Length: 230
Image (cartoon, rainbow, N blue to C red):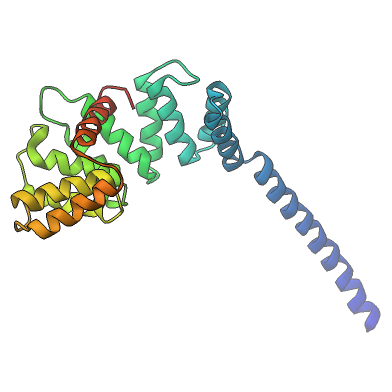
């Protein structure tokens, strides 16, 4: 009886050991050569200013469907870092990342659609993707969406929606959101006029050395987003 049990156990033990070796090999491979590993190495090169090496690794990871790499590769094409500047390629990779729910992919895709809008009316797709990003908590998307609802881009103004998105950004500690929310309270736009709250949010913005001058710089930076400056 013991011999029968021993004979049954041997193949089971050998099979289990083979399975563990296969799983271990896969884990090691993914850690060293998988898309996330390539992406992380790419980030290292990017921070060092080695944009060509970074772009190469982002592209490899992006081709494997890794959303953060798709977003970063789109960014590289948008800025022309490590690859020739190509807005069509940028949109292609942002779209792939956005469809996987990547928060920055959604934001940049929205910005690219807005950049391609005709006249002063932003595209519905642009607002759609900005809103998707904002709903995931991207403060930059919340800021920009709020400004769209102020009527700065040809959309009929909706101060309540503008204040809502500025408030979301402000509660994340975003300096621009804090500054804009303080202005909404100061002028009673979308929220009841409240000088105490206006002063509170302005002080928080100023703690980050955020002033009216910085607001205009941010406005310029966001316009640069629209026209390829990132």
